[in-house]
Amino acid sequence: METIRGRMSHDIGLIELSERLAGRENIALDLGTGDGRFVRCMAERQKDRFFIGVDACRENLRANSLKKLPNAMFIIASAQALPQELNGLASYISINFPWGSLLESLASNDPSLISGLLSVTRPCATMDIHLNADALVAAGWSLESGANQIERVLNDVGWKTKSRSCMDAHTLRSIPTTWAKRLAFGRDPRAIRLSLRRE
Ligand SMILES: C[S@@+](CC[C@H](N)C(=O)[O-])C[C@H]1O[C@@H](n2cnc3c(N)ncnc32)[C@H](O)[C@@H]1O
Figure 1 (cartoon, protein in one colour):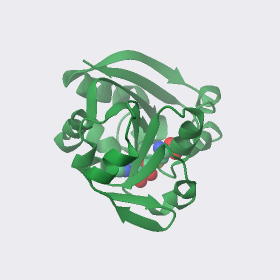
Figure 2 (tube, rainbow, N blue to C red):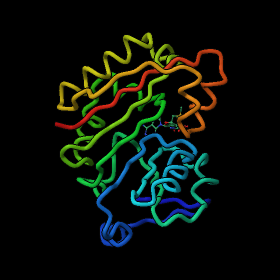
Figure 3 (cartoon, rainbow, N blue to C red):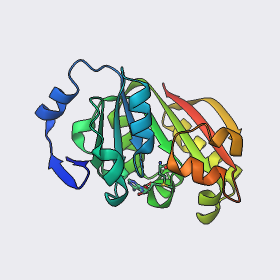
């Protein structure tokens, strides 16, 4: 699979990945990581966790992936075709403010994404999804109806809802992603957080 640091990409296989993750029990995957700010901030805060940011687009990752952290890496991949090397690794998944095909695949129960989420996670893994109103409206949903649909899709395949909450500009500011910040200061700072556990 292709990893990226700054402008340099590097293919790593299972053996090199296992070496990077040696002794790590707690592995978090951030799907649609964007510029990777969330992974960089969280890896600095939670040193006992290894964070892997995944995005299909490499350009935005240049700056944050340059910082050398012992517990973070970035992978260029489509969320619908996650590398097999990630299978069974993640104890936690975050999907922060998905748009485009990532959002569509969640809402349409696209098997390439939904079964991929099951493949890369461990039993009892947890997942947090932040959905924002603008992205759902652009995809033809309201915030509530889109969140209901995505919650239903995930519940049906065994992700049980632990909590669901509405977010506003104030709560958005507490999430260390570039998009959360942009939304918090934008014209429609409404979002929903879904927290789920794999049963
Ligand atoms: C609105 S941005 C959010 C970025 C970041 N999570 C944040 O909160 O700042 C959505 C991200 O999802 C990524 N994305 C969309 N569809 C994707 C897919 N099918 N596979 C991987 N990444 C995808 C985009 O490239 C973009 O970086």
